[in-house]
Structures are given as C-alpha cells and as structure tokens.
Image (cartoon, rainbow, N blue to C red):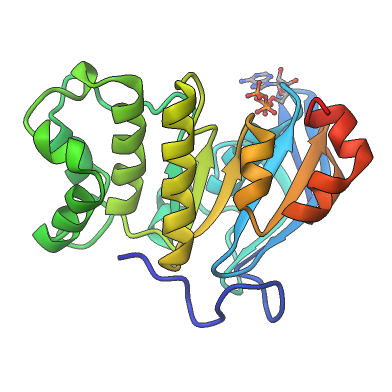
Length: 247
Ligand code: ATP
C-alpha cells in the first residue's frame, strides 16, 4: 500500500510538495503565471477552476510533461528538470484525464504496466490489494480494458496508478462523464485512500463534492491562484459560491 511519509495529515511541518513561482507555457503562450501551492502528507488538496484555467497544465507540470520555470520540490528535493519517468519513480502517480487505459490489453496487464517503474514490478500482493479494493476489476481481470464501462475504466486508471505505489497521487477529473452514483463512488475511493494515508491532488469539476472531502483547496483563474483555503471555508465563501459552486 502506498504510504504517506512520516509527517501525518495536516498543514503543519514541512510540506510533501512545495511549488513556487511556477510558470508553464505552450510554445510562446504562458498559461501558468507564477503558481504557488503546498501539499502536506496525508492531505487531499482539491484544485478547482473553470475550463481552461490551467488545472491539467499544472498537473502536467508537476509530472514533467510541460515546459516550465519555477520551483517544484517533492519530499525535500527539487524535481524540476527531471524527466517524467524519474518523477514517477520518486513517488508521483498519475490518473490522467479521460482515464487513458490501454484498451486492447487486459485489465490485469494494465495494472501490471502501472507498476513497471518498480523494481521487479508490483508483487502479486500489491495486485491482490488493488483487486480487493475494486472487486469489479477482479471479475473482469482477463477482459480487454476497452470493454469496461466508463466507471470501471476509471477504477482501473486509479488502480493502475496505485500499482506504482505512489506517495502523491495526481487525479485529473476522475469523475468526468460519469453518472452521479459513480461520481460519489469515485470521490469515496479518493476519501478512503486518504484515510489509508495516500496524499492526493484532486482536479475536479464537481467542485462541491471535492470541497466536501478535501482538506484544503486552491482555485485557479486563468493561470493564477485566485483563492485558497480549507474545504469548509471555500464552501462558505460567497465569492467562490458565486463563481464556482453555482450558488
Ligand atoms: P479543463 O477543465 O477544460 O481541462 P484546465 O483548467 O485543465 O481546463 P488546461 O487544459 O490546463 O486547463 O489549459 C490551460 C490553457 O492552456 C488553456 O487556455 C488551453 O487552451 C491551453 N492549452 C492546453 N493544452 C494546450 C496545448 N497542448 N497546446 C496549446 N495550448 C494548450
């Protein structure tokens, strides 16, 4: 099971992730303009904002898939300039937007590939833990991933990331396109993972659901952090209510 490090939940002590003055660009267009944020071990940190605000780009920047300037420190060491595979080896796990499972490979092979950075791959124990968490994946273990429903593919995408035993999970809109019942199920999985010590950054369009389960949240507006605070504080903030919660 992934572990959260030794600092425990809460925002005291040294952060697991510290981002400062982060800028990201596509070609000549800068889309993140000096973002700063912190994530502490054991937290769920929600990242909210309108379409195009820069949420996906921020996750891509963290994992080394965007052209960036600024500082990203993970577990006390700068990871700027490291290739994506090295950041993943150091403990980042990605659940990408739109799941991006390998449709022709079996569910089991998708999970196995999720762990290929680990020496020797995920042990059978690790796979067993993931299949216990998502029983539907056990039922479909030998089926091509492309045959799964959207919700099942999302569980597979989360399971595949967990197979790499990440210490910080980056989830990009895991509930996108799912029916309301499945949205609650996926959000509940993220909450359970936190209770087991997995730290997460959760990008979510379902802002109310995300604010209800997160420890803290940041709201991005056109590439800048516009608001930050605890879930309850942001839920109660009239500016956030008006702009992002439809209240
Ligand atoms: P969404 O909720 O729609 O996924 P987002 O908050 O994740 O939006 P990003 O996808 O990070 O936002 O996009 C931030 C900005 O960067 C937008 O203006 C978008 O048009 C632009 N952008 C994103 N990807 C690229 C790309 N590959 N090339 C050029 N511009 C891009």
